[in-house]
Image (cartoon, rainbow, N blue to C red):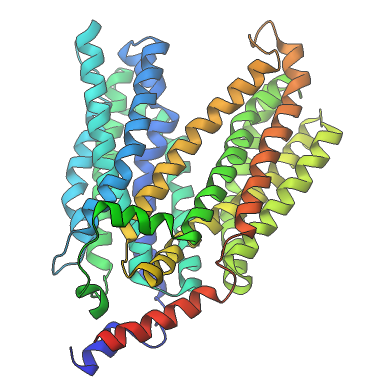
Length: 462
């Protein structure tokens, strides 16, 4: 490789991404959330009230598919990392996966004319197929953040734009699905299918646009000369990556707190505030605040550091939970204020862990020599999904241990115990998250030093 080629591949100071390039990649999260938020908000209802499955069977299918999804994330990551084409590692997966993902999404919203075991098998197969197709696009989409730039500040900025598009996709699904279902179909089954068709077409167009607009840098000379790691080497390098391991522990703590807070809102307004209708405006205010909070925390992460922003968010959350436990607000305004402040802290942690994730790639690369973008992203998504499931289970188990067995007959018990369960579980998650982040080696300036060492290594290899 000539000196000129090396300089083009490995700039001494990473050039900032243009706003157009950032938006071109970030819009992919809008497409991903057209799928993800739909199955989050509506698929269980579709299974029970449209397809006709029992609640137990529908829940089992959804749980099994979620576990399956989490398990295949790191496997797809390892597979995707072995891709080498003149168009890059990740863009070919977006192009090849767009249409199968759209078709599989339409299949999960197809109500087959079957019954009994055959119906369960068909629905399960369709759901598993969708999860595989979704992973084949989601992992490379997330991995592109680590690929397109090594600049930590640029990654924080890009993560902010991604979260804004994700929030826009979530609101589009939440507000548009029911009206479109009623408008497009003579029955709910037909309406849901047409919404799936339109979502698949729009999302596919977005993924093709991302693939066309995003430019993947060439592999560095050091990486070209490295043989692919074996499975054992890959896992050893991952466990030796202290930045990634502390990030995962922090993620699991944050997921516990985030899940408890998000899933408790409607219950808190129903049983403690005793005004379930007030939960809708509260939820709207809390979710829409992301459009202000994401840019603010992203800006602060670039100025003060991602680890520092995470610790700030954890500190706000812990102090708020202590005050909440002491006061236990019963008015709608006070309860809404509590959830808004918790949202401020939650967004800080989410912005931090998604923007810290690509930085752990270089931390591991410096130690092992292998650049495992897709594998680490896939493994991180596995822990995220497992954390979501375990946190939801922990909330249910905690309420059960507190004596709340039946929501209807145990309303008084629920009102008394729910604030305690929220404070204890969410507080434990926030504390774990803060401790892990404090122990993270990714202090401000560390990533820049790592990138300088990698650049020197790559120039020498060139």
